[in-house]
Image (cartoon, rainbow, N blue to C red; front, side, top):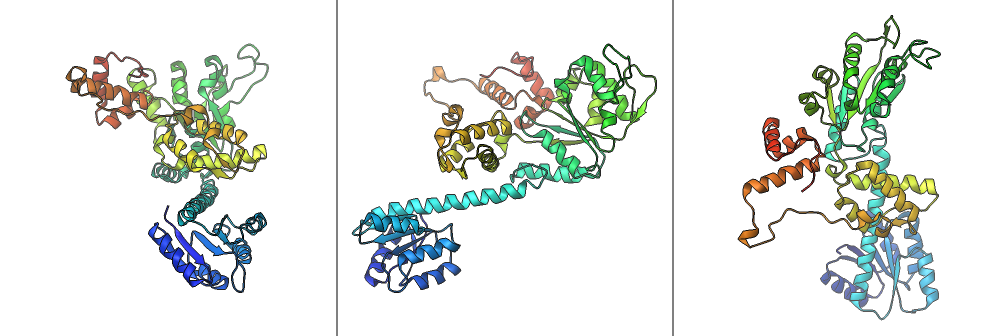
Length: 459
């Protein structure tokens, strides 16, 4: 690895030898004759490693270590000693040195030590940066990420928050759609009111109407007293309906009328009750396809889809996965009372390569496991779940020169279309956009391939 090295030695010949040898090995080298001069240089210049002799005229190399450790904790110090005693080595490490080298030494041995020190400093800086970014990003309603895809989400949230427009949040399971809904609420004029959430898929169809609109006493068995319902409970605030695509068809007209009239009729009641709540909905389904196939009412879709906020999958967010991993590592380190501060480079590589089908939720589970099993401050590859450790990216390649094994363009197109559809979890609208096709063309091709459901089998 390259890096900026400061050599501190009062022997001019030794300084010249180290400068020449390390420069040839790819380092940028600056030299000085004493500790006081070194401290002045460190104040005005940025170095990755300080290499200092143990015995210097004036301030010793050990004292220099202590002084640097007091105000430059990110700077690695390598001590060169001619004594070779364990006592001197231990004293150097206690003084803050990263490593020590005994004379006489080979320059390639020093180069290896400097490579490790430069890498160590880079990792230290990255951990510090991640911690800072995590702290700053969490100010946006708990949402975390600096990728262009997430910046688009932040912009939409800021622009729509101050209105009362209905918002439809879409994205795969585990992407954080409820966090987006809460961010909208927390930035709106309704932030002082309640945030009421309901997962439509988690409530039986027979009870969902009562949950939403309320009921009067005696409306059904066990209705021993009346209940206002979530629309009324959310007065002055926000009602968040997750998995809106699971709303039963029979209940959709009643939901549409409630949104149009801003009134609800409790189950078993005769009088309507006005409400003042903003509606935010979310789904991991392709509602446009559901509308075309008659599984979701078009008029309700257009009523809830006034502003559309798509939440990107984790695999489309680049290095956000490392920010989130750092966040989870810190969180679970506190939960488990473990001294875990960050990620090793190997872990970062594995996290970036894995496609995260379960998105942020899956990453959180993986990091919880890693922190629980960790034996060091930086998480190691062996701490990760096996499927992440062993993941190999699949590629579409032509691997044969035998004409009898090659396929035509139509077959390649078929395979690629089905692979894209699999990658977007059956979302035909998104698949059409990715492929650059209009939806009708995609439907026609899928029909020709014999694909009739939303989730075709993988090739």
